[in-house]
Length: 217
Image 1 (tube, rainbow, N blue to C red):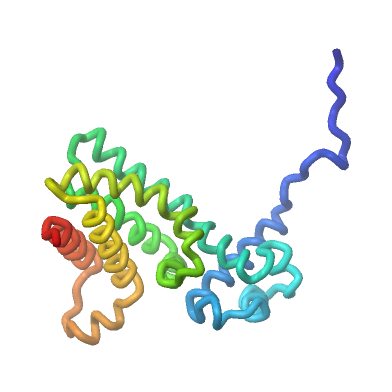
Image 2 (cartoon, rainbow, N blue to C red; image 1 turned 45 degrees about the vertical axis):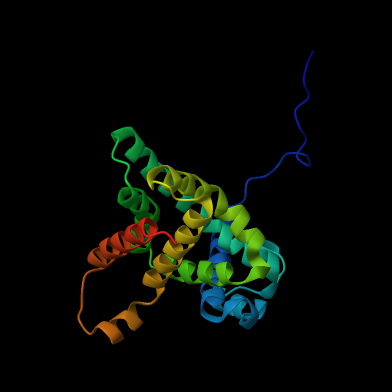
């Protein structure tokens, strides 16, 4: 029996290079504008201006404002999760899993990615906005909770006697501290007065969070 080839009208066309480039400009602009102004302060027109594209292009690639915000957060969530889970798997394979190395596997990828591309700092502010606003709980649930659950389970295994509530509370504190370090270098410099390397700051953060998890309520 011969299977008929799909007609051109049914065949799904791959996006053109031009379309992909436009889409990237739209989402890069959305990320920057939402990070600078928050969801309520940003407008589709602001994003279009930042992208150098007509408003219609923003709607075409991102949808309405809420859909665009959701898609902008989701865009980087998958590669960030993959990097974290790969780091965790290496620890399992090497049998070097401790509370500190576990936290390093979760925290360092964000800094490594932001070192390669500074727009990840904008993304960190965007995640902070989404995490602090109950309107975006579904974004956190879809984009971040699956990976968070993996690391939370490991914390419960590694910290003797810790309850799930204590582990979750401590984990959220760790995430908040990580986002603060990613977005608040100016404030740290103003208060601390002494310059230090980011790598030393990350190591301090990891030790700080590990000690906090060990000190349960």
